[in-house]
Length: 337
Image 1 (tube, rainbow, N blue to C red):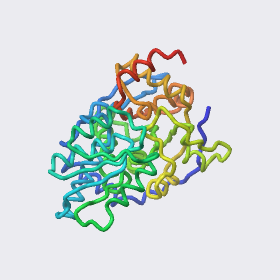
Image 2 (spheres, rainbow, N blue to C red):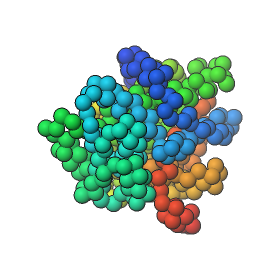
Image 3 (spheres, rainbow, N blue to C red):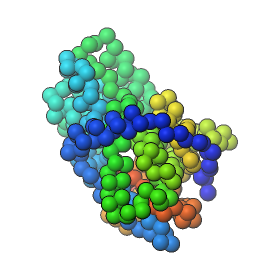
Image 4 (cartoon, rainbow, N blue to C red):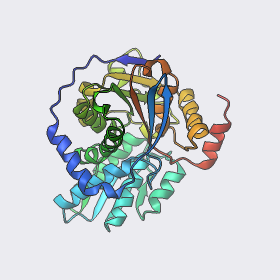
């Protein structure tokens, strides 16, 4: 089992952040769909899959993009274009919201980005730039392109206002399950969260810790990009080799996310490529959900460590993205690993 305890001691000091999430949730939540939930049990303990593949762009990132762009427009009414870096889903989301607001959009992508993601971005009338080695190079070049241009705004996937929107996923689940279980707030609750740039893990950690005293955050990364895990176990280092979980193929965790997660996370974990593929098959065979590799990280951790999660009354598992080519997904289903 590659789950290790961090021994962090989290202090509730994010009331202002929570208020921002709730304010923006009330104003903007009709711009995205509420999650689907699939429930199973381990020894009478509830396992809740949070399906975000139902969003129009196929991932939770539409929540953060909506909230952030709304905030940018309010603060910068003269902005005409947005520029971002993405491995796919965030870029699709930004392009989608820009189109709705009559803004120009350019998305900087790693050179090996899947064609389905490229097509979805182009379908939103956005420009793409594929002349980038990887996500980190795309981010550097996107920032550079917007310098000294007051009408062009660089939007990062790791911003406070992005977090306000992505945090709505936790508000949705709290609203639902506290209405179903009157003792919900006193239960022992775990949430498994994937880490790319930390745009879901960071706000989810703050919100779950704020509302539920007996809550535990478990982060999961692909073995080859285990940048956060490595800070707690330096014997396992990220190789940055290609991963099927391309959506989390980020070499450095932004400081905004790191500073939140280093205090809030209770356990860190890693999964390897075979475990991710196994999870993609599991989600399709059991729930008919098509997900990309990054979207199956949380499930991969659960199905390979059932005994660990018997200790919690509820375990919440986001399933985050479906932007994968059908031919590639079919080949994965036929893989015997």
